Structure formats: C-alpha cells, structure tokens
Length: 503
Ligand code: HEM
Image 1 (cartoon, helix red, strand yellow):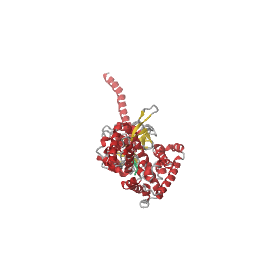
Image 2 (cartoon, rainbow, N blue to C red):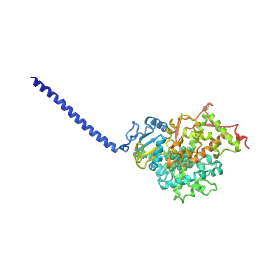
Image 3 (tube, protein in one colour):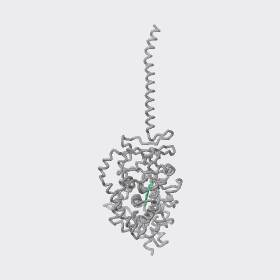
Image 4 (cartoon, helix red, strand yellow):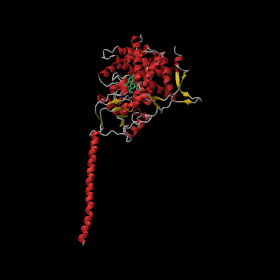
C-alpha cells in the first residue's frame, strides 16, 4: 500500500519535473536565439566594435526620424542639458544621419587635431555641397583634398596680418563689414543697394546651409517636400550670387583700391585655381565671415548696456591712448588696452556666434580614446556647452572680462595654440580652423573702439520710456550662426570723450 502510494506520489511528480526540465531547455534555446539575434544586431550596428565603449545616446527616439525632435526650439541650450545628462560625448540619430557631439575641449582636440586626417571632411549635402560650392569647390564645404588645400592657402595668405594691416591704414573704414574689407569698399557702401543685396543673399544662403535647406540629407524619402517647399529658389539664389560676385570681382580687379579680393586673384594661376574656384572662395569669405563677425558684434552691443562699469573701464583705456598719441586707437595699440582685449575675448566665450562650429564629417572609421566612431558620421562641437563648462571657466554663466586679463595673445595665437593653454574654442580646430580669425579680431576691435571713443551704449526705451535690455536667454538662429533676438540700443554721446580735447 505504502509502495503504491509512493508510486502514485512519484508519478505525480514526474510531470512537474519533466515540465521544469523542458521549460529550462526552452528558456535556454530562447536565450540562445535571443543572444544570437542580439549579436547579429550588434554586428549590424555601425556603432558597435568589440573592445570599445558605447557612446551614450538619449533613450527617447522615434522610428525613421530618430532623435530629430530632441533638439527643440533652442538647440544650443538643449544640447547643454543633454551633455549634463549623458556626459561630454554622446550620439544622436538624426533621420539617416549619425551625429556625435562633444563638449570637452580635450576630447575635441583628440578627435579633430590628433585624428584630423579622418575628421576633416564635410557632409556632402545637396544645397551646401552640390549647389553652393558647385560640387565641392572653395573652402568651407569642400572635401579636404588638394584643391581645398590650395584654396585655403590662398585665403590664409590674404587674411593674414601681412595683407590686412596695410589695408587698415589705406581704408580707414575697413571695420564696418567683411564684404567691405574683402572687396575694398568704403563706409558709404553699406547703404549701397548692391552691397545690401549681396548681404541679404548671403544671409538667405546661410539659412539654407543649416538643416532647413538640407532636409533631404536627414530624411531622403522627403526630398519631394523639400523641392515643393523651395521650388527653384535655391538655384535662383545661386544664380544671383554668381552674377553679383562676378561684378564685385571685376570691379575689385579693375579698380584702384587695394583689397583682399584683388590680392587673391593674383594667386589664382600659381595655385591651379580657375574662375569658378575663385568665385566660390570669395563667396566663402563673405558667407563665413560676414554673419559670424556681425553677430559677434551684435552680442557685444546687446551685452554692454547691462554693464555700465565695464563700459567705463573700456572708455578709460581708449581715452588714455587718445591722450597719449592724439589719435583714435588702432589695432596695433591692443597691447596697451588689456581690458578691452579681455572684454572682446569674454564676448566670444559668453555668446559665440557659432554654437556648433561648422559640422565635420568622418571620412573613415575612427578609434579614439575608448570610443569607436564609424565612417560617414557628422561630428559636432557643442561650442556653447564647451564655453559654459565650470571645469574650464569659473562662474561660466556670468560675463566676467577679468578672467582673461592676463591673456594678451591674439585670437589666432589662442585658437592655434597647445590644447593645455587654450581658452578660446570659438574658431574650431586643427586643419579646418577658421582662416579669418585675424580679420575678425581687427574688425570687432575697430568697431568697438570707434563706438566707445565717442559714445556709450545704453539700453533701448519702450513706448512708456522704460529701459529695455537685450535678452541673453533667447537665441535667434541664422542657419549655422546664432545671434540675439532683435533689440534696440541708444548710442549716447560722451561729453567726456578725450577726442573732444585732442587736436
Ligand atoms: C567672430 C567671427 C568668426 C567666427 C566665430 C568664426 C568661426 C568659424 C568656425 C567655428 C569655423 C569652423 C572651423 C572648423 O571646422 O573647425 C570657421 C571656418 C571658416 N571661417 Fe570663420 N569665423 C569668424 C570669422 C571669419 C572671417 C572674418 C572669415 C573670412 C573673411 C572666415 C572664414 C572662414 C572660412 C573660409 C572657414 C572654412 C575653413 C575650412 O573649412 O577649411 N571666418 N569659422
């Protein structure tokens, strides 16, 4: 009896034990299937490479568009938040584009300088590459090949102090705008409808160079929407640009005024460049030089009314030079004007006009630090976040020129120096670092000195007579450049200007 019972008991257990074994085997099989499909997925994942760390990425992501909604209305501030959550390097899937974003200067230096050979490409987008640069001519949007190198060399030569300094003396008013500096026009020229038209077209082109003009490169399936939206406006814009630039170049070459465009044309044959190349190079100097420099000045005009004390110190330095030499200060006096030098440097840090640099493109797989970045990835410096890093700048959210009082290096020297000594990132990195740094510094210095020599910059007034200050917290995007939202100021004449007393 007891034996039978035992048997019955046993047979009752056989099924559960068998079930457990079968379940175990099934789980093992499912796990194997899962891990082999995971492994297959990993092998197909362009970001995966054995032995390398995963680059973090925000979890919220949608099919097809990926992270395209993550940057919101204000990408500069949004990227700062994402860096706070994910660290100094993270990646985004922007439609079909892979992006890597960096906020740590040491990482950026390693990526763009040490690995410069594979990180100096530009994304061959429809508008910027095919249309604007006529299939990769010029400097800004061309691939880093021999022709780019020659075009860049020619630009670097004419934008150096050797060529810019004599022009400063002969054309007193070079300060006003990059177009004027490049084509040797005088102060009356900004009111010239032709020059105004060129600046307007440049601004339109710069907008299209940003994401809005290149939607197809994110979402290729939607190219028809882009074509519908833009129609043939992009072709027309380029046609206009070409006509206007041909006229400007011809005027510069035939005219009596010495200017950068004229100098540049003399190097054409020596560097194997044709007329189309020269046209795109000169277009590059206007597109990359005009908005960046004028928006930087706009920031300064917006910031200074908040700080009357800073303006007083700047005016005191200008007055000291006027009293000493009996003339308006010029760029070569900068050594004697450390406070102004510091203010201009702090302006570039506090609100740069280029918040994502000009995105680079990896032309090969890259292994750097413990990370792997696949070929054909867009590489972006999160410049705003980099400038706001407490590790690099104490109290970064405050405008404090004094932090730079001991640094009298020119902007070119700072941007090209050793990474340990670098305190300026606004001009990019390595092989593609901005070639117009010297001209930008001269232009901004001259405008500020001339303005403050006779005026103070005061906040605007609303219709009730209340003071209205430029907002520091809203950025207006102009394609790849950023400026303050529209604001007003008042230039108030200085009764105490030393120029009133100099002979
Ligand atoms: C405050 C003013 C300026 C700022 C903040 C600025 C910033 C920059 C940045 C961030 C880059 C990208 C560098 C990289 O890829 O690493 C760049 C490139 C460039 N900039 Fe500037 N820039 C300024 C003024 C100028 C001026 C005045 C000119 C010429 C007249 C100029 C001409 C160029 C050109 C041609 C490139 C493309 C270089 C290449 O791709 O090889 N920039 N600039």
